[in-house]
Structure formats: structure tokens, C-alpha cells
Image (tube, rainbow, N blue to C red; front, side, top):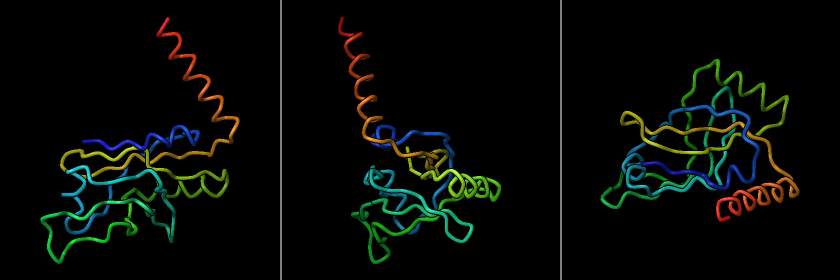
Length: 141
């Protein structure tokens, strides 16, 4: 089961990718396994030496009870301290954004592929569309 953020590669230049775990509560993992989530508008932020994923939607688990979770809460990402220090340097010095590219299950645990990215301008997006159309045309001919 894999959820991919397709708009991320269109809206951002991806410099680097980092795999990290997610700290989940209650029935969130069951909802993720069912594919009831959305990462299109989400992003990561560093607070007090920890990385948090904001604005990710994980729907409520239908068979859950009073222990169901809040759908858009902040979720802590699990990274090594050296990886967090590296991210802090890149975010502060280069002005990059941390965007989730993909969420998947690996060995029974939910993982996030976090992209260190820089935003594209409008003309960059037009160039991407142009390249995609040329590739499509090449295969049709």
C-alpha cells in the first residue's frame, strides 16, 4: 500500500529524499492500511530539534470507538539526531521546504519519504509541462 504525492514533483525541485517513521496514535495505522489518507497539502516543520508533519489528513477508522484520533493533528516524524541536524542546516541556510513525497508500509510500520525541496516558479512549471508533452509525443509517433 503506497500513497504518492503527485503534485510534489510538479511544484518543487526535489534535492534529497529521507525515509522516516511516523509516531501514530490509536487507530491511525488501521486507517493508513485502508488507504484513508491524503498528503497533498502537507509539509514538515522543525520545532525544538524535532520534525513534525503538519496538515496530513488521516480519516477516522470506522470500527473505532472513543479512542479515535484527530484527523489533522501534528504528527512527530522519527529521525536520527544527525539527520535532524542536517535538515536544520539545509532549511536555515538554503531556504528549502520539507515535503512528504510518499507514505508506505514497511515491515508493518508506516514510513514517510520526506523530500528536501525548493519551490518552482511559474516558468519552471511550464517547462516541466513542455518536457512531459514532448515525451508523450515521442511515444505516440
